[in-house]
Image 1: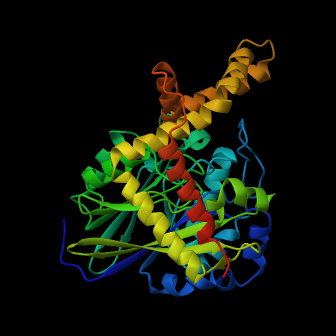
Image 2: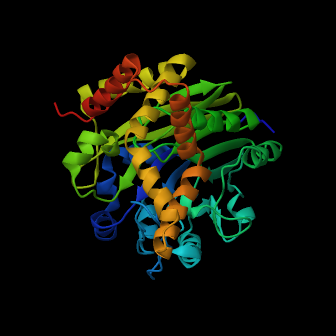
Image 3: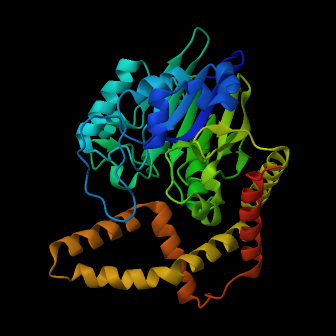
Length: 409
């Protein structure tokens, strides 16, 4: 039910994962100093939303995971620090919220409730996980839905975990809610990590939320900001990147191979009875893990980066060429690993069998991953394994603009 509402401002951040030195900073320092460049933006918001990509719990009880993804956890006191930053809603549908199992999720839910922070996107049953967080004022109601590909954190059947991003179910929840709330935001955790342009799977999922009735769609997970667009009048941000993420072991290597890790965008959504507008505010996470401003040169490069990505997404043939090239890049190392997985599946070692089965299971049930692998196999079948020079040039330009966005004067 659309109403003639006054201006209503919502600010959304990307991934918050305070482990190690960042956790210590949140618990020992004035949090306003940590987010100082964004403090004024946060203060203007009627509602501040962030993605909590870590369970808040005391007991270490990690689930079994395979691959390079760690099992995160942070102390429950972190919730109070996030409350002082101004967060009113935290989304939990992501691939780390179940890192400490059901016990860790249960304690996280209890901790956030005790701190007065609403949440959505994960629950002790899948039906609960799919319920929105609702923000109510005198003049309007806002529903925030949160779904994720989820990987190891995804709820199975109606069990505990992250709300599954599903082609029909997720969109139908948005459609049902359209008659109950003045405004709806769909926040998705999906996509391919470290890639500066959304895949066709990500684009389809986000547009489906807009088509179902969301007033705005915001996504994260790739650890790098991506472009935005207006689709059927609905603003879509395809990835905000990190907001506050714990330290990496080798910053120089990260900067070389995934420079977007240290670049963050914060989405400012302004709602009226006529719709929603989106403005992106770029920041950088500095070596001391606090937020910093971009330089004038960096802001210029960031705008070029976002605009270039938006033009690529608006040109399907050019966009497809980039993802064909990404599939080629993946397959150069993947076919060897696939041979090893197949060997381990037939191993007499139960752990080796279980590890390969788990990796392949996550690879093929997570849309972002299996679509990329499927594309690679298709290119092999069609004998189109040679590199595409235009796609390589486009990718190089995107990565160069990411690095330039983080440049110093």
